[in-house]
Amino acid sequence: MSMMKIYCGYCNQYWEVYQHNDRNSDKARTCPHCFSQIDAQTWKRQILPAFGAFQDMSRTLSNDSLNGRVYFSVDFKEDYYFPKKKIQTDYEE
Image (cartoon, rainbow, N blue to C red; front, side):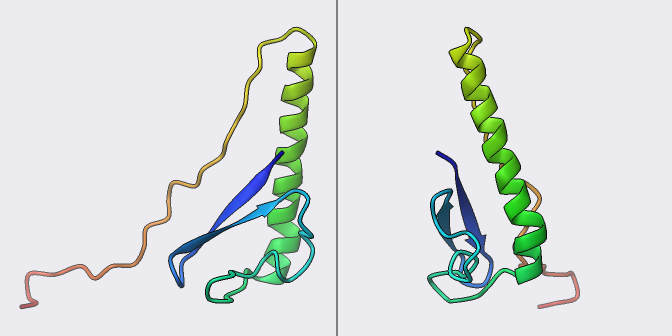
């Protein structure tokens, strides 16, 4: 089973959306902690297709292993987000 773990930059919390959840509802793209929402078009055009491709890949890898191949699993993790923080400069006291 696949799931998405989503980070909210507003409240610094995470929530999970599973493949069996109603992914097309506003609830799935809404942070349950602070109620901030991922843009509806971003959710529909980018996130859901990427999640579907990930599920397809996972099923294919699983089926490959049932046919005598080595089992592999793949996780994707974003690695370029840096929270905004104040940078002290030489001219600040």
